[in-house]
Length: 273
Image (cartoon, rainbow, N blue to C red; front, side, top):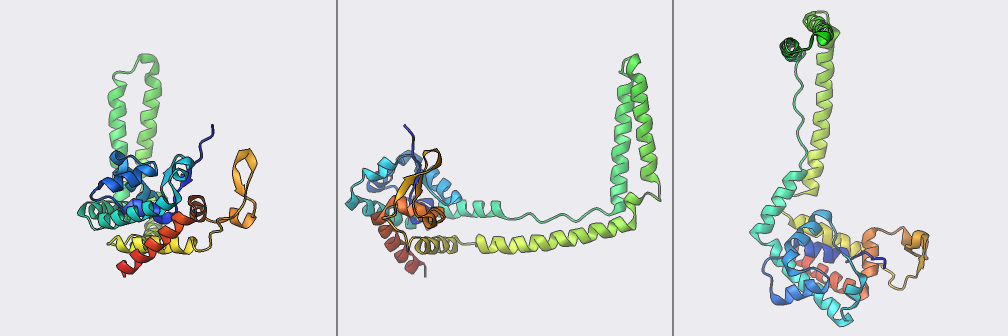
């Protein structure tokens, strides 16, 4: 029997991503109703947070919850989500996550004088190593090793050659220009990182809630599906088929779940402001 992967609306996903501070019995029951055992809640929450969505393995799980209870499940999850956001544990986890997304500053390039010195030392090391190995090489293979050593000695002479274009002032200048471009790119990526990952998670929560409200405002819950290629269900209306994954999450979750999520999201946004 084919399993169907179902995702909750993005608000519910974001809520679960943020929430678990004190697991009350009713919260555990709410989570287990949507297929998340209490013992794995924290792992599921953080996976949802870092991935931006929550998935669970069976459409029947949601459908078995009575229509009157689904909204209560969403509200319960939203409440403990807000509690977890205020916890020190969450803040520290967010800081670690944020730091992991930070772009790395490029290192200044070596000058060609420094590069020549490093290349020379490396070639000298390889020659010494080859000469040491030569002592233990079988007689029939010694000519090959000796030839290799001579080739490396020639390369060493080329490194020392003042006219070698690899170490010219022009290469120095080119590397400096390339480094400036790398720095400019780094500054742009750093600015984007600061926008996307602010010091406080509050701005990100607000962004996700706003996105959910925008994407869930025009969901057509009466949209028809038909069997498409390889048995996959697709929307009859091609416009709906091109909608975002979050829009489709809301459609699959159903009107009552999404309406409860929208109400909770609007209230949460007011509290944040």
